[in-house]
Length: 260
Image 1 (cartoon, rainbow, N blue to C red):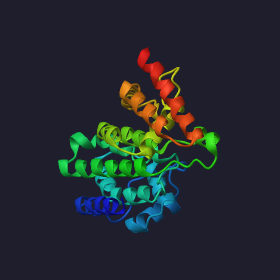
Image 2: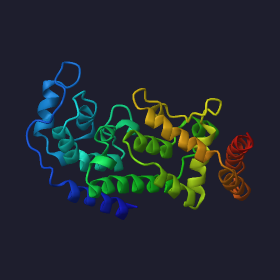
Image 3: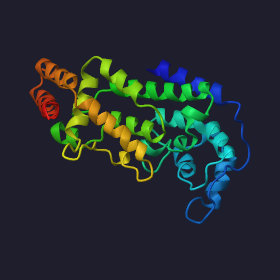
């Protein structure tokens, strides 16, 4: 995955390099949003040296969306991607919200195809890496049920950015091995099925009803007989009783959903 990330990041730098920018970035300069010191730091810190704490100030500044801002954001996107890969998220509210401004751009419809493709390709590589990364079970059941699911976080980030989650779901559908299946189980057992809601509250954005629509698509995708069969088979093959119990729990939940 290191090579895939390196190629994706280089592609982003190549495609967005024409959006060179010098001087002050467009931010909200009220006393609440961006302080004069932060404004100055954003104007003088080279893009590729911006720490996540500084870039997050730009992320959540309440400045309007304009063509100038769109070009600034394109200029900054390679740095956003680098920080996300390093798990040093440029947002005060988590990975789910760090690329929200892409939804303002409606990038898949309004930006050149080559730019939209670079963004979508990055999302896919990030998700593939997540699926291949083992879930930590050091704390047993307690840690498993209390932890946030990284795959769900990334899906939610893509939805909030106005991206297409379906290529990611198709990748999950065909991903082989233990790790992708345990991530499925994790997402299923932590959801609130009495309300047909996934666990992550960032799916429920007040001013972005399209994000909740995407969540419902994921809920429907999880509630299929093929998912139940996958979990059942993984449970039969699991040698550790505690982990088999988790898979069995997830399989029973999906089994009930399939029957209703």
